[in-house]
Length: 329
Image 1 (cartoon, rainbow, N blue to C red):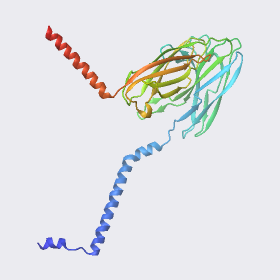
Image 2 (image 1 turned 60 degrees about the horizontal axis):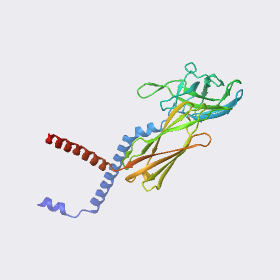
Image 3 (image 1 turned 120 degrees about the vertical axis):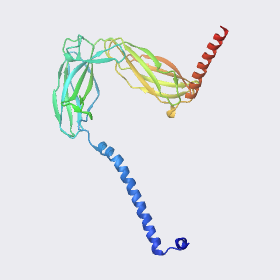
Image 4 (image 1 turned 135 degrees about the horizontal axis):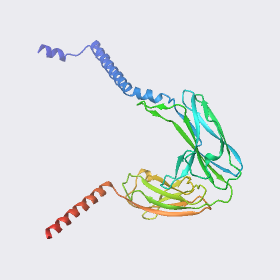
């Protein structure tokens, strides 16, 4: 009883100050421990993220288009930036671009593997085969391209490949060949055949959820003897015919006698679609004589719950009809 009463007695001023100091110390200790825990968890990430990559470099432009006549020459330049902290050596090589029919549109080949009668690797291309760039340095590499005087009107397509002189090791010590290619497209003046057609425009999925992006595929076939740069506009309309979204298609090149697919992903207005029926309309400039080709594709948007209920109803209906038919037998 005496002990209980002593615990209820009023505390002195000195005791109250001592408790306040203890509470402040405990709060400070808890805050410091929490901050230390956060730094311990995230410090490796912050440190690794701040470390520079010793094998980073950029090249521009990614593509160059040149108009030449037979017998002419032209000098173009590539801009290479060494963003690493070490001096880097680069090797420059040349490859040909050849047309394919499977949808990718082109493939790379060495000069000895190509069957083209006139190709980029047969041109007189003067460029440095090896260059060194200091850390943080930007260097412009000149490339002189000369066309023989007896070549007919056509287009030539090549790749200047820029690769690090040394292989890079990833975290598993695997060797990675780091290289970047710059595509060069040359059109030789004269009487050429420009013709192409839109093969296909369709939605990869006709049923979408309200949060799903619309994925459209465009297939273009170049039937001429020079490369083409088609471009266009996609308009999305609801079931009332109201325009709800438009997407501009930047030009993309198609080599002669090639079929190239292009996929376009479109998110709904404000990131989601309203349930309903939609129409996607394409107006494609074929890349020559200002010819326009039009096509359209339809898709339906519904919540996932409706999909699941519809699928369940179909399954139950099939089971019921099967059971009913067996019962009659």
